[in-house]
Every structure is written in C-alpha cells, then in structure tokens.
Length: 106
Image (cartoon, rainbow, N blue to C red; front, side, top):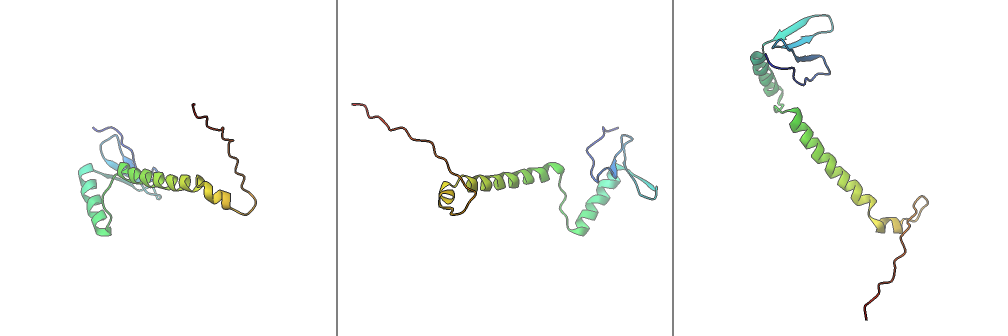
C-alpha cells in the first residue's frame, strides 16, 4: 500500500491510502480506480486533448523561472536612475548621497 500523495482537483479527487484513485461527484456518486488503470486512461485522455503529461514540480520550475525573469525586469526598471532624473512630473524624489572628495596620496 502506498502513502498518500499530493492530489490535484482542489480536493475533488485524490489517491486513497487504500491503494486507488477516488472521487466523489456532487450527486454522491463514488468512483474508485486502480492506479494502473487510472494512469493508462489519464495518459490516453491527455493525448486525445493534446496536453503533454507533466508534473507539479515541472510546472513550478517553469513558473519560478518566469517569475524570476519578471522580477529582473522590475529591478531593471526601478533601478534605472536616468529615467527618474529625467521624469518631469510630480511623484518622484531622487536623493543621492554626497560624495566625499577622493584624496590622492602625495
């Protein structure tokens, strides 16, 4: 018997600790499917609708990559000093630290 796995479907269906996939429909109908049968049928279903089989981990890796790229774009925008210095409207304050003169050793 396998341990309970992460499940999809917002709790509507899951892998049962009893060793099968299980769902309960809104009208109370219960469906139990052996894992091998479920996997075969689900794979065939994905092929029919043109969806590539994947995993939560794979999807989250891609999402994290895209999020990090987006964050970099936000950083690049926010840190573009020249655009803020040239902005001619209200709502932007740029404060620059005073630079100390560099001493040259004699």
